[in-house]
Image 1 (cartoon, rainbow, N blue to C red):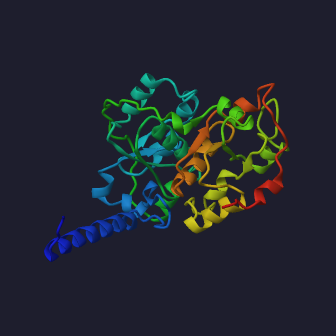
Image 2 (cartoon, helix red, strand yellow; image 1 turned 90 degrees about the vertical axis):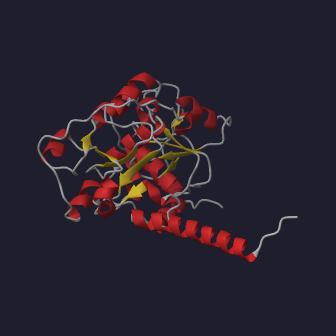
Image 3 (spheres, rainbow, N blue to C red; image 1 turned 120 degrees about the vertical axis):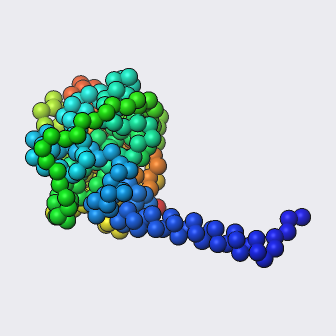
Length: 315
């Protein structure tokens, strides 16, 4: 029979308390809302500005090359958002992506933080692509470039330091990507999958859209515009309380397996990030989205119903 003396119990209690305190301190240090399920996904500008913190991260600037050259966060490296957005394709070219990611100096154990000036949309896409290829510790700078400037933190300009390429071995996360077949399977009852449309209300209802052959929505899709998750003024993600209410008002259940889409993966990446931030564990990006679905002849389409946006999710 196991016996514990008083001294052993005290030591065990001390260690448990220390672990809890350390965990709480880590969340507070990130500066993110501690009531998020995964606050570590966001890094605050004031925290990244600390030299000992910045040195632990590969900082990626997802703005235009011109904006990067003019002024940037010290130590940041530029990533070509347009190239990455088009190059992802079906998410199958592991060799090419291993080289592309490694050229940024990102190895398999690297910590990465990304920022943009597009209300988190472009940074979220690159974040999602990195996570898909196996970069496990990738975060967004909360508020992006706008928040960095508002805090009057140091900036750099001129010629950036040359980046030394490293070896990166891709570890594909197929569970992060939904395909047309997955969506059709959900509509046919093969998969239980909640579909969330991250586009604008006009695109969802079929009254506005991009240059697609067909307009409308995937049948049964819930609608929540990506920008509803981010404060339009500060570019920061809304609080956990606000996000929970927003998801609920849209009839979205964070605990259900979900695939989200937009036109071509970027706006949906913000939605994936929001789901992850709130603790969801089964969220996929239908990356090809409406650029594929809306240009097929046989995919089922219906006009999105605005009323569906206001049906609360059932517990």
